[in-house]
Length: 199
Image (tube, rainbow, N blue to C red):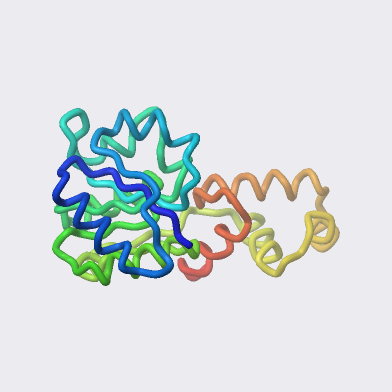
């Protein structure tokens, strides 16, 4: 079951999204919030997989919700559901840690597709903006590329160190750098992002 939190300040929209999502057998809305501050206070204690959030609130405009000091995108995988369909807005949201961006002009079916993709660790952009957004891979050094290739092959730090003639500690340093550059929390996410970016 994919557990969803909704952050949307228009009750009729929020209720409609919840109704549509709960028609799916593998999705459950476990919490919903009208005000960002209420979400910020409750989020650390909530047992959920994904957050779906609008971008425009009384206290937050545009991407400010993703820039808040609470840094919601570091606590939970986040999908932006917004009336803003500009490629630049979507790209910036992804740069700030969002895993998905769906414009409100799209169908409920596409939102479900986005939820399923993000839950599996993939990025998702709705079709109306996908072709407009080019995600540029982060710059990595030749050594980081070698470490990444071996990590994706499932090799341990010790084995990688032996193959490359470097210490385990150096491998861990390269791995930490890769995780930061790709904005990943796990090796699985790192591998998936590298694959999606063609690295």
